[in-house]
Length: 335
Image (cartoon, rainbow, N blue to C red):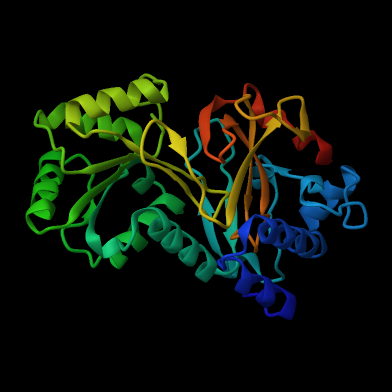
């Protein structure tokens, strides 16, 4: 764990109620800290001609293309990599997985815990039921880590991980309801579809949360169609969603219709597709970029490969993925 005073002072401020202006000021402080302590991000900023002397406002901070997590260790710490918590993306056979090094696991745990409480309240009210077969098959999944933490915080009663034993999952949902706990089913898309196809009985008492991803197991579906099918077959009024990724410490959540909100220490904006330093207007589709203040030990400013749009009230939607997104920005540091 980093031991310098500046790091500890910034850490103490991440989860405070700082408001919009306080967020922007803290983001600037974290930018200056990460420019000084993160060699990869510093080189990227220099190539963008955006060093701290040239950056005086939040809007001028450069966002690191997410592909760098596949090719470089993105760390703002002098702690040895071997001593860090490391999350690895599921990836595919023809891509290099992303690796997110976490020098201070306490921040990640606090982010996922406080984020869940911000949107859903005390985990003890729920039975956390995780349907994440493809993630359980590979080590280093941040999603599995999050689910394990929430199961523990819920007290573990009725909760746990499920693979293909759908009848046991349906039974756990009913048992949770009888025990006055809210069944909270967190699942990858294809497994949720397999589940609702298999049970044949509506389970309207459950909260169903999809995390995306067909993983090549089923035909890809647009989000609205996926939610319509899950809702019709499970009997729930609306399907919730979680927006997170290996490269982030925080998650955004949606309680229906694919519209997400961020916790106070996370901000989503949409940049113009052909100009990552220019913001797209409200309602206009562009590239999602995320400021995650909990990414203190890596990089808090990440340009994703997702397309989305932000409404004027700060809510956002995910529209899909960029074409040829692996190439965007990463050629700046080849060689």
